[in-house]
Image (cartoon, rainbow, N blue to C red):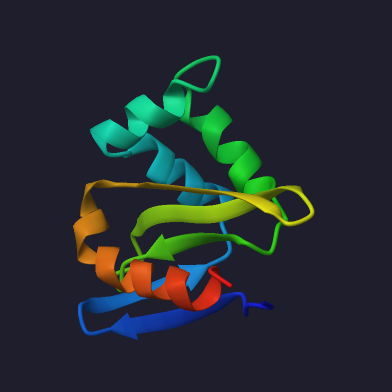
Length: 116
């Protein structure tokens, strides 16, 4: 599905802006991860440097990667899926403690745009 560079998504539970993952926004989310996300994500990396986690996400040109912003412009979550081989995808997501503000709206977005 082709996505515009930015869109506003609204559901009953709230609003959020969805953009392509810019390095600045990726770094913000990676520096402010929820404790459970930090433990899970950093367990698969060589070190705990947020910039080394943010860089490949922001440089990814995959169609299925987004940064989710609150309506105030603050980055809240990173979301995407990497194609491992044709027909096989690995979804991923990580968020800041503000995730509860957009959780239901993001779930609706995922169901409508990512799940065939």
